[in-house]
Amino acid sequence: MKIISSNGKEDLAIVHIAESSTGNLVEFVESMHLQKPRSEKWILTISTLYGCPVSCTICDAGSYYLGRMSKEAMFWQLDYMISRHYPDSKIPVKQLKVHFTRMGEPAFNMSVLDVINEFSWYFEAPGFMPSISSIAPKGSEKFFDELLRLKNEKFSGGRFQLQFSIHTTDEAKRDELIPVKKWSLNKIAEYGSKFYVKGDRKITLSFAPSRENPIDTKVIRGIFDPAVFLIKLTSLNTTQNALKNELTPVIEHGSTQEGESAINSLAANFADAGFEVLLIPGNSEELVIGSTCGQNLIAHSR
Ligand code: SF4
Image (cartoon, rainbow, N blue to C red):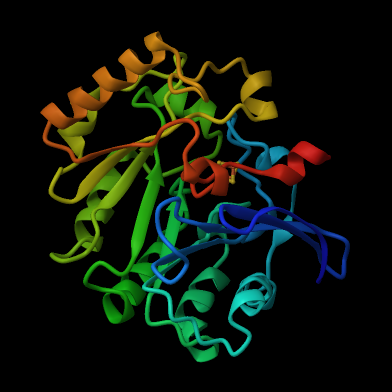
């Protein structure tokens, strides 16, 4: 692998693009929390696939798919970012969050589990917190069973973050938006109840609301337990695919009054239903770093 470009600001986020020996491009990001020094929190976001076969209508990573990344290629991304700041591989950061979300659905790559499992063989990082964001594709039971085992064995007590991208409660719209066979909402709820044990972080249900894709808080409350799941409402990025598919974000960069009131009312409905709600504004750190599945600069540049 070799670095092609690195752009951004050290005190905010740097997006690196590298090229594999076979000519595939990969994108990964290191970023800072806006209010915390690196010693408190540092966020690394790596890719797990070259592109993505899912082709969600909101995401540009799905415009192409060139295969899974090897464990070594994922470690290469981590090592590149870590050695820029901690060349001795000792990372004295209180919370080192590693998102496996930049390009690619992580459940399609079993090597993601090896990277999580073996991370401590190569890096001394007491604050390591892995984070998986998934659409829960059908057939990924083995990945999620193994993930559950790994979390219980090494990352219990709130040291693991798991997120499912839901986006809409209208099943037909969900099939259009995420056009592969995937777990039903009931199956996600059932898995989450097995995955979560007291002391863990709650599992996130992520929504990037768009006007075309309804979200019924009653449907979510009827299926998901607020003691196990929390809700994240984030901006739908204006990717090329989102524009092509004429999706209108409810939360926009530089929100309008109308958008703000719609999102606040959705957040209030979820809160009334008993859920903890994370409302991620349109210009937030999360969007800069792309910690929600489906953000991709390479596709933009192609
Ligand atoms: S949103 Fe995630 S699963 Fe969907 S195409 Fe993009 S990378 Fe793949």
